[in-house]
Length: 419
Image (cartoon, rainbow, N blue to C red; front, top):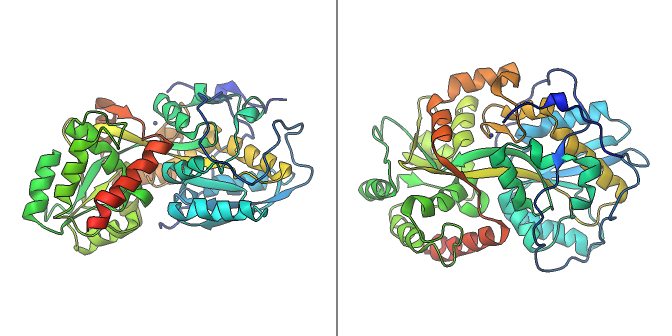
């Protein structure tokens, strides 16, 4: 039977310490949702056993332990949701364990457990990078058979841009949070009083200030891959969705920029440390990566954010995916948790301290519904121009799984290996 949901909950309509806060109000167990647009499955096969095509129960036969791996920094947004779920549903989970890793490590780790017939990771919290790698290797449980039972009305209750990003999961993951991301630039205003407003101006600035601009490796960095995927729109490439055949201008531009950039670290947090310490003066950033490190004091509050002229936003999102090979009871528990995370009350928690600003993927979860601590942090450390930029520019999806993997591979080959 469908999970319970009250439609009046929805109305109208986008390496860091964990922020904790208590959630407001009563927390519901179900969620609305409509079937995601189905897409073709990825090539390849997995030795892991397939999940059951349907589930007779909406609760496990006994409470289970859920082991959750986060490779996206998502726990900063969802840890309070996990805590609330465990407190409210002892009949579903006896305990929830969490661990963290990196997106490049994800697919090999899950694949090794599946090949050994011993899947110990029951739910993965991932960005588009880890999602794409797992789709390519056919590691994730297809979730479409469970939509009607656990996620009735899914797409209808996502924000429009979030609904578009949900299709990237190819029915193998549930989108939990969304934001327009970037590409944006973050600067030390004492060193960069007039930020560049075009790719050419950025190249000229980097040439005049060698080693003072930096972005992290796109394969493991939200700002890095958003910068990479945003350039084809800014440069007017022939096909921004085709990194192999449609990015001639982008690859030429990045090769030129490569002569003057600082080295590419493996994590976004390293770029934040470097700009805070003055090693670099300007970095690629996103809405959340601009706000949150300044809230936490990692980056000085006075540092500034800027947008390119004629900006096209590249959306980013984070997903819950379930590896093939989990037991039926663990599958049910993971699905119940994902549904719980999409209720408006829980989505309000994802404003956090601006880490994924705005954050909520579902409609109607406005900032006034966020915890007071979130409202205060965003009022103090946000920039009202960000909302203006979001309202005034196109928003495009990140690349789909196969194209994203191709883009990362080409960047590694053409740009990263040349540094």
